[in-house]
Length: 401
Image 1 (cartoon, helix red, strand yellow):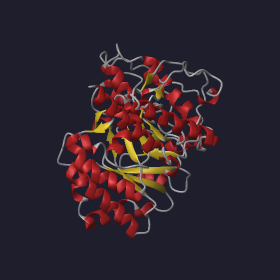
Image 2 (cartoon, helix red, strand yellow; image 1 turned 180 degrees about the vertical axis):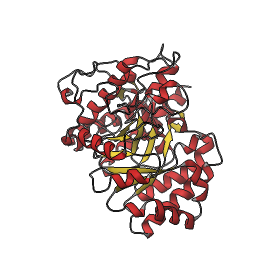
Image 3 (cartoon, one colour; image 1 turned 90 degrees about the vertical axis):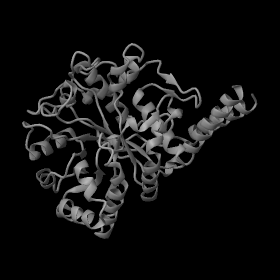
């Protein structure tokens, strides 16, 4: 048993070294984004949404389709948009000609006036209830990428967002691994991402973990309040003071175990509901404001995860508006920072974020994002050396047992 534990420890330490070496070759993150869902019958018109985003100084958004009104309204603005191919269309796009036709009809008419920077092919396809979709995913991704390249737009990144449920294990982060039943197609997908230098997108919600086990999981850790005890990965010895970063690093480890490095992990969705059913523990305006405010504060500090501290984690908040027509529990309709009338659901208070504790929402009514926060933090050579030798020391210590 002792030999097995030593072997496992060595494996995790080598993975940490593997992941953190030369990580600076990953493309730098530039800013925060927000998801603009439209499953509602009372949302403001796209031109009003554009004004709101401009007021907030947010320059990145994702929509869940290729809505022509939105894409036209956002033309000649500074908003970068990621669009989405709906899941029900995937089966058509494993035909290269159909994919080319889709790009020609849904993307090309809006370029270059509208800044379409990415196409998400489906949403959470790896874990969708319709398991027949998965066989179409990689061919559709490749065909759309090839169509864009053929038409002169190879700069538009093609990927797909996944639920954290793609992981067989996520705790501790170094144990991160993909479910064995999706490994074959996941390998093909990761190979595409590696070849095209495209990020892996994950939908990560600490709220769900807390809702499932509120008596065990500390609320401060899930919300990202500081200070909190957090957790230490027993193999890498990395300390985590918030669950979101632990989730992201678990994905990094899962990718590494598939044999890939330098695939950046980005968060396509994360957020916290301001209202829920009686059994949805933790859903409240106070917790929603605290979670999002803490996350935005970390973004403005250019934070990376403990495994990749030099690369600021790119995050898309969910969501811009409450959406009254979403099915499911009450929480599903209450993730928005704003009500459909553009009033704030709760106050994130970013104008005073630099001087206020992360544990309590600010009383400021303003919501702005400092443009200086888009700079990427690069650690000093001394810090890089410290991390490297800390891991080497742990390896040597383990080998001497």
